[in-house]
Amino acid sequence: MGIVRLTNVTKNYIHNKHKVCVFNNLDIEVNSGEFLIIKGASGSGKSTLLNIIGTLEKPTSGKVTLFGKDISHGGIHELSELRLRTFGFIYQAFNLIHFLTAFDNVQLPLLLSGHVRSAELERFVHEMLGRVGLAHRARHYPAELSGGEQQRVAIARALVNNPTIVLADEPTGNLDKQTSGEILYLMKQLHGEGSRTFIVATHDDEVVKVGTRIIDLNYLTVGV
Ligand SMILES: Nc1ncnc2c1ncn2[C@@H]1O[C@H](COP(=O)(O)OP(=O)(O)OP(=O)(O)O)[C@@H](O)[C@H]1O
Ligand SMILES: [Mg+2]
Image (tube, rainbow, N blue to C red; front, side):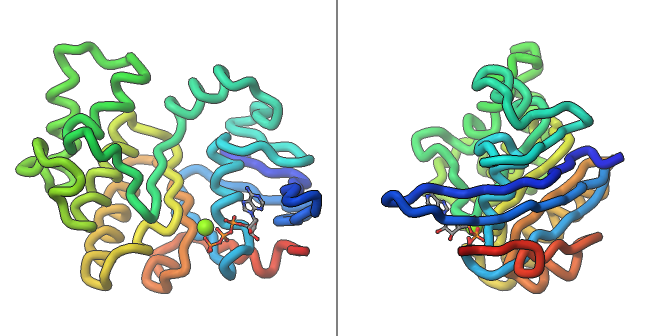
């Protein structure tokens, strides 16, 4: 059975009193350990789909289950707790907190989840920064890092809580070709360690190539 299952999921937005239909009756199953690529034209609903899976948005109708549990109607507190335990998020624009150092950005999910004893926090964060090759930049602020380095910090932040599922929205979208290649290599390396699942929305053919499966929203959705 899939770890994430969307059954008959429809998502509409209301914009200026008009209905914007993103998907209709989408059925998707994600299996443990996949490096699943979500592709599709701009506006086809890739980010919306990741946000629904990551419990940041609710479907208009249909059912979303995570490990067999229905999460379509969860409350704010229940969902935020679930999010911290289950998901790591990586974004195109890195989304680091600009007034926190690399170290503090990576430490944040550990502080929020409260599962790591304070004596161990520092070791955990340093280990994670080491894994993304940035131990020497721990005290730098985001503005003092290159784009590729910022994305490495964001990846460290996404993975420090040891999430089961990593959701990445255009993770190489703001990077040059060589840096994209390095970030992709890093994500594949982190995917290869254990049974973690990656769900990656992308336009980047190099990223598409390394997927274990591709879902193309152009062929699954009806936008209006
Ligand atoms: N909050 C919102 N209100 C109204 N419409 C929205 C909202 N968010 C997204 N949309 C619309 O939903 C559709 C899907 O958006 P989404 O961001 O998921 O696309 P995408 O596939 O990620 O595109 P891109 O490749 O450009 O990132 C778009 O047509 C967008 O305009
Ligand atoms: Mg998008």
